[in-house]
Length: 227
Image 1 (spheres, rainbow, N blue to C red):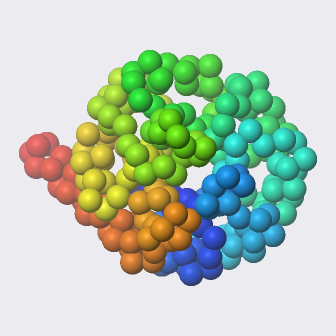
Image 2 (cartoon, rainbow, N blue to C red):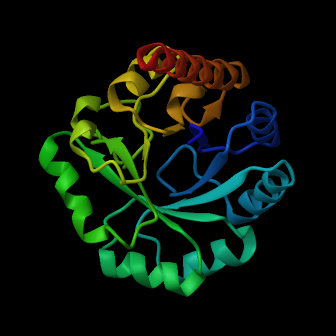
């Protein structure tokens, strides 16, 4: 399986183009007014169309969004994925998946091993999980806080569990994160920003290059061990 990269919290055409130029796989647009990465539905729709034309899958990131809000997002943006980053129940996730006919990515905040047990009721419903770090106590944001968690916890997961690693990832720690977690998909947001909500094109480039370098090194290492 090729390692997948998602650049999240985009708000400009330049950032979308840079993600496409670097052969990232997915881009995320955040609909949460407290977030510095929040975008209007019209802006996201325009950027998502641009992203699709460049071969990128698009993700609508919502936090306990009501039906009317989701109807507008799906109708106008036409995302490829719905990312549920709040306290959405398994029943809610299943209902939304059926309502819109879209795959669902359910996010979970992780600090200790017991946090991973919470995914069990969503198995068979969520098409993929996203594991982020628990936010600091003074944060109003469920994600994008620039903090990480103990990646060793992911070693307890069933190998068949599809997930994306998130939380405090940067060009400097992504190699260690991949080596420890063995994740095959990663999500970055604050780690490629020069200020909250401001994506830095050079930082996006450096992050994606670091991912590819770490992946290539891991593949080379596996090849040597198999000989």
